[in-house]
Image (cartoon, rainbow, N blue to C red; front, side):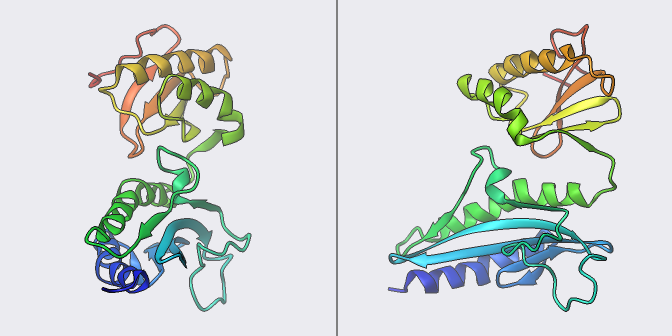
Length: 233
């Protein structure tokens, strides 16, 4: 039977890396990046062997190439230098939040962890890196610490947390792992939107709710208690 380290090496080389290249990443082993003229958008795989298994996670970073001038290789998302515009473990983008590690151990189901990590990159890491490579058109509204109170209320109602809040145009956009087919999420987020709108912040006149892929779910305005918008179900 192959060891966990051998299986992990095979999983990254023969499954994880090819899947990332198919998604548009360039790289090998434990470092991948998206092509961009001005910025390094990097994905790093961080492994921690031990106890007959290998645990690994994924880290992400975006760094201006001008700040990385005269350095021979791309930044390492697993070792922040302070030059990054943004750095985050993938767990912060997933609905669970916090740290997320996958485990590879000997046995017939060892590849499931690798496939799950690829799905997490496809569904969460890749859209976020692409978003951060776009033109600077968004302004952060609240940090995670400031969102703790709202997220606490969402957790009480068993609704996924707000991953980020941003101002764009005349709207406040809330992003999270929600579905337009979830009436509980709609109801709780409508209440949260009313709370944001009650602050009468002149920078926004509407609150939009988007899923983790940036798809519009609902839009709330002061006079629209139902939070409907064209195309919502």
